[in-house]
Image (cartoon, rainbow, N blue to C red; front, side):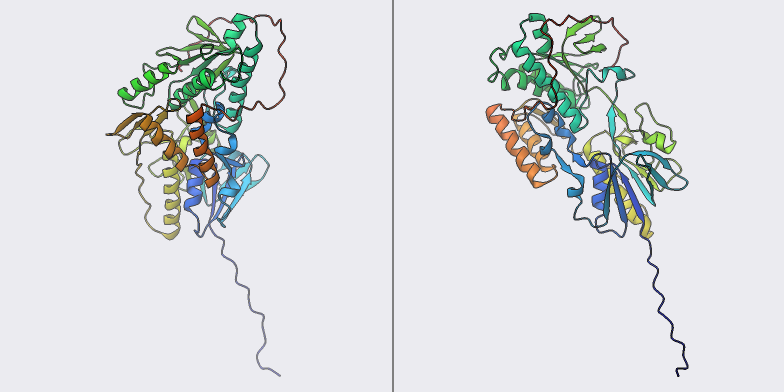
Length: 449
């Protein structure tokens, strides 16, 4: 008989790894997630869509140059090799900062040790949200395909329209906003309407269509140097775009846009004039600026909470020069990588890293062979800038297939003016032949564009 009592070995209690919840699979959220690859943390990546979109090329989808699959990729496929990541398709409806829980619309609660809010921005109509149905913007694949449908339907209906007034309105396209998105859209629509489709239609010639770009400011591309703004204006004018500077939009309807007291009959208007941040400030119970962005410190923490990071278009923060950081993809990507380093430093007891934004330049394309690039001391325009723009955008696409297909698509469009993605999807309602002319409403309030 043994003098020692045999006991079962006590199982070791597993140590829970820090939980990192990332809200948003845009540039900032993906950058933070990827930078934590292999780290001793568990990451939950939440997005209301199952794909990541390369937003700088959305206008190419809206103008039928590229297909949605060319500029988007499934989030799960992008992070499939990162074993410490779980992807959830859901939307946020609230955040309990005391309990450190993210509340999802599905009713699920996600506890976190570290929270990264990278939820981006949506369109801002400056208090006139009723204009959205008539002048959609492009922030998502759904937006881009809706704009594409609107443009292509206008061309199809103009082909058989016998009334000169209605036909002119169908072939008039108004882009509201003279920033990079507006300039790129106006140039692409002009090429589509003046060159790409005229070969396929029998009654639409390169001189039938009218493209109007409206901007509230005194010059296009205001973040760029004045010389490049002037170059963009010249290139757009050569493409046949009618540019209206220092002009405010006062009304938008299904078949018209009002500029002051002037009414432009147009069945297609596209909004590129302003953005509003996601409701992150409301979730946090935090004050926001006029654009809905959350004020954060130099490490992207909202006041009083070092466990939360707010980055990208959701955050309002200044760079080293004291000026607000621009709402562009490189800012979000650099912030995301910095947040990952800050989380790792906090978990290991190291001092927090400092953030310094490196600005690589501003880019905007005007049509198939013209662009402007501001690299600071070095400025490029024309065909050389367009080639640089093309290479940069293709390089930063996610996935080899996307790079190959977009590179080939851009080259083919350059050589042939072809627009291979001219698909109108969904049910198309017929338009009555003897439709009555609509009544134009009186001017509304002045709204910056």
